[in-house]
Amino acid sequence: MNTGLHKTQNMEIVFATDGIQICTESFGDPEDPALLLIMGAMSSMIWWDEEFCRLLANRGRYVIRFDNRDTGRSQMYEPGRPGYTVEDMADDCVRVLGFWHVERAHFLGMSLGGMLAQIAALKHTEHILSLTCLASSVWASVDYPLPEMSEEIHVNSERTRTLNWGDKKAAIEHMVATGRLLCGEGRVFDEKRYLELAELEFKRSRDLRTLQNYLFLGGGEGWWGRVSEIRVPVTVFHGTDDRVLPLPHGEAIAKIIPGAKIVILEGAGHELHKDDWEKIAAAIS
Image (cartoon, rainbow, N blue to C red; front, side, top):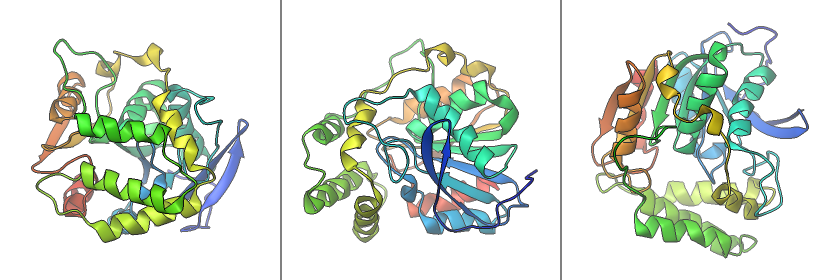
């Protein structure tokens, strides 16, 4: 249940807490069960499409999204020197809930966001009603080798070190090219959508150079291998053509966390594709 609710919605708000700044936004009725959206590495909250957020809100969820550190309008650090860990980022999830005066929420995390949600589910159990992981991996070792990202994805990721992020044309072209690589063979790449979001990402960001800090992230070792202790309901969505975290990563989450369910998205890549919105929204609601 939400108490002391903020009535201002659908407007980005930057708040300060524990010496950091976090940008956040909400959609829907604060009286509905809350759903916290946690984006992955090198992407701000806008990659949770506003239309998708409204779809979830219309299905009876109070939707909250936010910029992780070093993205969008949240706290920035010197490029190449992240002053935080993945555990700090998991704590940020609870900081955002605190700002909106939400005591407990459903968590939906994509890619790295799904792993942050797993850490939060262990460290901040009292704040989590359920956990949904999209295109993510398990915060634990498994007794078999998990496939690595494809070579083309690895090369593309390394470009963040040398790209001139101050060059609008180069930055936007890189983001669109990345989106094309992430799109699964069973989905149609929406170049118009990616171009619009990439332009907004460039406009909103305080400094896109800080995205490279995600290549240096560490921490969270104290929670590594403990995901089998998670007791909230867990649902995993994973595409069969994910070239960043191939399908066995999602299957590992469902295998290790007791009672977890997996929904396989045939032909989907490492993406939140519009073709899958309804299926994901239906499962959450």
